[in-house]
Length: 276
Image (cartoon, rainbow, N blue to C red; front, side):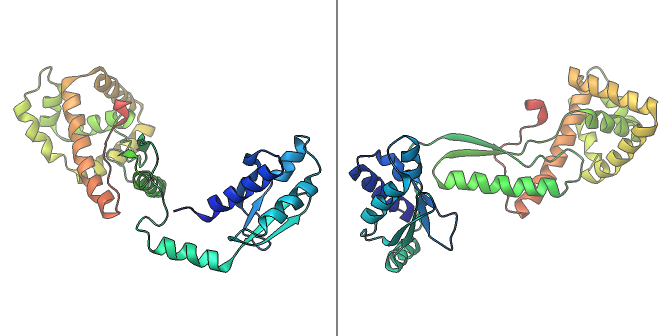
């Protein structure tokens, strides 16, 4: 089902070709001045720039040829050589009826399916989201759905903030809060069976611990240095720290998935910053 702009573009290309000019000069776009026209064609200006003649004369000849086209109510020349096109009312009505009867509302599928990853959202472990996260999430979800609707293979990635200094802060805060967890994560070979102990670190606990730890790190140099060392040890692969870090990510992701789903947003991938 051809749209109006495509139909007008084909007509304009034929009009320019009849004048002995390249058909691609007949490119039609939505009018910059809707009060004057529905669509416009600026090909006469490009033709004149290429040394093919006076732009107004070219535009007038093209407009004369276009005026009899069944889609066009009027074709008029404005300024130095713009061709302004008004569409016939019955053509508009026919197009609207066709769109109303089309389940895809005129959106064609892509000719070649592409593999696309849309990276959006950006929530962080143990941090509350703000309006910027909401904006990115809504726009990203819309882009993902549009690509899918056109027939592309699309995956949405949350870009999960699960790495960096904030992890070191949480590790230190949890260890200071609970000596049993401290003993577990400081062990050179922590017992996997004891990982269930980490369940006592709930999302509510993380929400409480992180702001306090971040605030303390701003004024307490020793605390800040401990968090930095914890961050370095985590990134170096310390087993107990990795165990606790995985728990942070798991607890936070579960809650975020529920919140995002309530907004109509569902990610296919939860790649974290560590995965980059």
